[in-house]
Length: 261
Image (tube, rainbow, N blue to C red):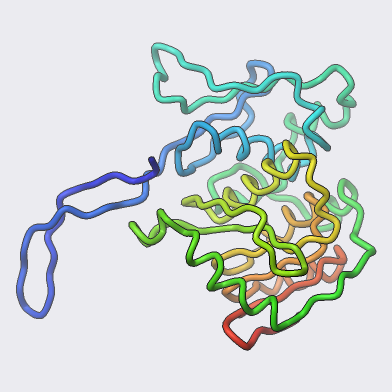
């Protein structure tokens, strides 16, 4: 469970009183490739979703292309780390050296999100080709997404502290939703889920509960998802990158209104 209960003091209308409150858990996850540490991510701990998170992270960072590129993936439980906070991956023998060596260099993701490294848009577009297909989107259907994900955000309702990412069909069907303390982690969990399910994302919509910064746009392209939509605002770099990447971008999606960029 990604929730911890703690004692707090509530201050309201000039009065103070003790309460037990729920907060979202946050713990580090070390990612190792064949025993070598390559990244540490601050995330909402969940044994099953950690696998999705790491799988999606490796995909959106250009290390793997599909789930068959992973020979084995598992948590390590060591005397110095008994909390399932380390995952080691063995890559399949067919993974090209170029992808294997990707982790020796800087990852794409912004260091402001707890993951080391930043890269230029041009470098990312060398790894991931721009999306050339466009899908028809009903704005009326798109504007129903915020309410649909709100009903599924169980931990957010308890804590108010988690972001959500979801994958929708163009008909408005919610395929999967994941929550995490980091919005980029929630997206990587979605990508990891899709890889393991061998889900074709070429006509789907990625929807996120907060704003859209550059790293979310980069991960959308890495997963080859053609449409990115959000409840919040996009950054200038996200707008610029989506235009170059061929990703259709929508922001401020609310009931009966949204902005298309």
